[in-house]
Amino acid sequence: MWLPGLNSRKTFSHGIHPPESKELTQDKAIRRLPFAPHLIIPLSQHTGAPAKPIVREGQEVARGEPIAEPGGFVSVPMHAPVTGRVEKIALARDARGGMSPAIFIEQYPAANQEILYGAETDIDSLTPEELVKAVQATGVVGLGGAAFPTHVKLALPEGKSVDTIIVNGCECEPFLTTDHRVMLEQVDSIFKGIRIVLRALGAKQAIVGIETNKMDAVETMRAGIPKGVPCTIEAIEAKYPQGAEKMLTKALVNREVPSGGLPIDVGVAVFNVATLAQIGELMPVRQGLIERVVTVSGTGVHNPGNFLMAIGTPLRFIMDQVGFKERECQIILGGPMMGTSVGTLDLPVTKGVTGILAIAKDHPLAIRNGKVFPCIKCGSCVEACPMHLNPSELGLLARKQEYETMAERYHLMDCFECGCCSFVCPSNIPLVQYFRVSKAINRERKVPK
Ligand code: SF4
Ligand code: SF4
Image (tube, rainbow, N blue to C red):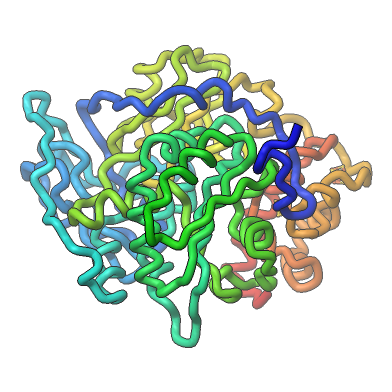
């Protein structure tokens, strides 16, 4: 039987099909999680310069009030996620295992948590430059996990232009269902966001790419296109990493982003669907990002679901709400392919956190940390790499610490750390971890490619 979209041939070459594991939460509507008594708002939860606090210890803050200003153009402000009191401004643990400055807020349990900030704005009256500033003021960053400040993508560099906006509704990481639920439940906000970015960039059209395992979202989005918005909804093959910018650009408009380049080099700008929903909801009323939808899932979670939660909510509070098998599980922030395994629950949810997973340590999707065996030259990693790199050779060079050769002869810097190679490796070689470290070393040494 042929169904529109289900037999879609739109895709990219290579990639993998890990177990999707989305059935735990894909039918669960978004529910609001209670406010935690204490919240931690890191000042550096986005790419770029950290935000600078504009409140002092002991100060009362109202929900939605700006509490930190951008530290530069590539930076965003922070807003109070709850009404309460600033307990302290001090170092807090981060997901990378280090410490970084954060604002700690104690919530007032008796407060009604009403948002008093904001003002209605007619977006059609704003110039593209004013739109960029207004989007920066919302504090919105890439909510698909990248946490790159969204307004920066709206400020066109000299000599560049964008004709097509690509909206990423793929959500190709296993377990995660936040974007899926946002497309079913926040259609109007998504299209408001699409209108804003089309206007800011002067683009002619928007294309929303959604994988064929979310046909209900394809239909809901198609039915929701407002009159006069030049937008099409495309069903594309469910394959990992279909949601990566370069893969999506190839699949939807058949343009190759050059090595070392960005989608803007081929006239395209890519935005995550949840990011646009937040811009559409917040920018027209001049409010700030204070909460987000997060999938809490995994075989070790008693009550998995998709939850709207305040930025800064501690993981311990969230996991106590849903219940989980603490001793037996690995905790992952984000999806299992590109996420981070964390050893503590003393961490807050930040703007870029798409999911919190608790999965058995021996689950096929657990992040690998077991015994490593020698490369058997099976070629599986080469077959899997969507960037057509040679992960096997790169892995050998990483072990020999030949970082510059990796970049100059084997295009290491084109690796976007999707994790396909590590996932398929029968020798359990943590290739993607090697490449992360090698890239960081090359960046420090400023190797050109
Ligand atoms: S992590 Fe890098 S090398 Fe490995 S498959 Fe992905 S892009 Fe290729
Ligand atoms: S998948 Fe692993 S064992 Fe196979 S070639 Fe690649 S690195 Fe070697």
